[in-house]
Image 1 (cartoon, protein in one colour):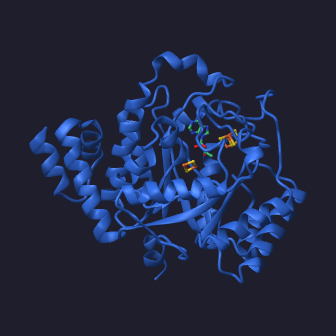
Image 2: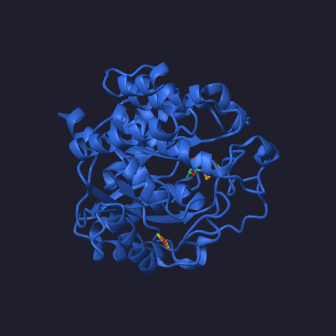
Image 3: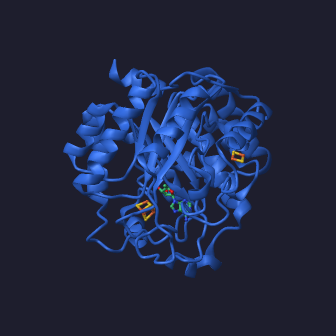
Length: 361
Ligand code: 5AD
Ligand code: SF4
Ligand code: FES
């Protein structure tokens, strides 16, 4: 194993088998992986960590993913939608605190009103910041026309996680094929790219039935689809979801986090110049999950800007952090954490994916 890991870290391109070996490494061998990822990050992505202020706009969702706490089938979830003024206030906070960008995230909805409301919000955020704030959207699958409208209004990045790249597993977690279609999701990623967005995707790690081979394929999926930004986090159970019945099969949480960190490190080595997020789900498992992720190769953090009184309702999974904090508390907390992890915050910068600019050249 030591020789194999060392050899793999010195070769290119990495095969599926190599990735499986890296993801299965532990102890001093996984340390070799983390050290190499840190080196690659320094050289190709730099030492800066960029902020994306997260605005959880609404927990209304038309989908019914079996793992998610705000799925349409969870009748116990208390539904909300921020007012226009609440969104703009959060964006103003981000602008004044010199965050480079904001992310507007919500469950997936269609409908003209929704599309127009988002379009108006994008324009207003652009206006209040004289075009200065970058805008990322995370609003699920939409029509080409909708993606186009939002792009024209001023959004320039879009996150759409594939969730799992293996179609067989995808349908296991999304069995209702009236609302869930793997090919449609893939097509949406292609549309976003065609329109000109910086395209983000991602997966969950440690799902029931998922193997290390599946995870290696997830990494190759990002490479083959030339993704600009990736957000990956551990799967975390939620009592009010159907997937809770597989609870006994799950890896212990600590191991899920460890596997996620290895995914981040392996991805940094595989795709050197992309943006990789240290996701909130990592912090739900370990108070220092995001700092560990930055050390393992991540360079993006999403401080929560959702008004405090709604935070408990955007409960995708258990133990979601920062639900008792407000924007200022999260900012102070994060700054300290990032410095502890040896990172420097890229205040006032968009921090675009270098990969995106290279592929556009
Ligand atoms: N555990 C971890 N991540 C989850 N998400 C949804 N439910 C869970 C869960 N139980 C993630 C999905 C989605 C993102 C917004 O949150 O990957 O894309
Ligand atoms: Fe809706 Fe996203 Fe949750 Fe699926 S994961 S139910 S699309 S919010
Ligand atoms: Fe929200 Fe630490 S980042 S409390």
